[in-house]
Amino acid sequence: MLKKYIAVAGNIGSGKSKLIEFLCSSYRLTPIGKPSDDNPYIDNFYNDMSQWSFHSQIYTLSKKFLHFQKLSTTHHSVIQSRTIHEDAEIFARNLYKSGHMNETDFTTYYNLYKSISSVIPAPDLLIYLHSSVTASRKRLLAKSCPHEKLIPDSYLKHLNRLYVNWIADYDLSEVVIIDTEQLDVSSSLVDRVDILEAIERFI
Image 1: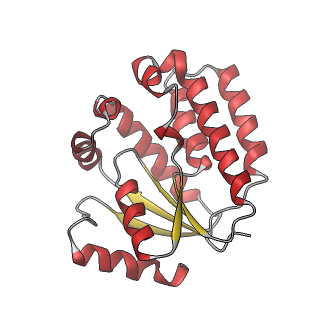
Image 2: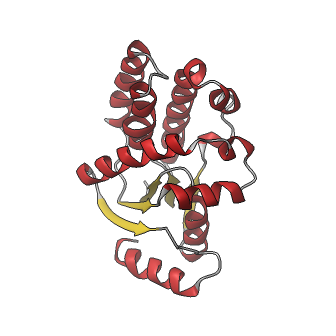
């Protein structure tokens, strides 16, 4: 049985990967794999969102469900980048609202999400990283992932709006909100100490 399940939420480029890397080095946490790392649809998705949105979202949802099935017997504490709730309520919903996913596909996806979310545990702690589009863009340009560098600012802006509404209503677990506008966990000792102090009592 899981000891602790920590989730790190936030927009693309908000600093999730760096934070998870830091927390894993500070605590005995095992990172849950990111479905986007081996998503066979991801390049096609960024080239044509309307054509590949459903495929990409279904892949991500199914992959995360498989992760949870494997974790059901582990005794380790784990940390995850982005919950399935964000995938559905922010990313899939944004694709639907922007016309990149039709109503039939969105309904099919959302019904599957509701079924899966009813049988997986809520996090013990959700760490939400808030970042402006400008700060997110700066991080994306510094990364080696070519498709993320091509993400338009308008896409990030729409996601940010949905995130603000989502986190305001989120009530599944304890929440720690961290503003990552100027955050630098890689080289700032002050930032690292501040983060540890903010989450220490939940770990």
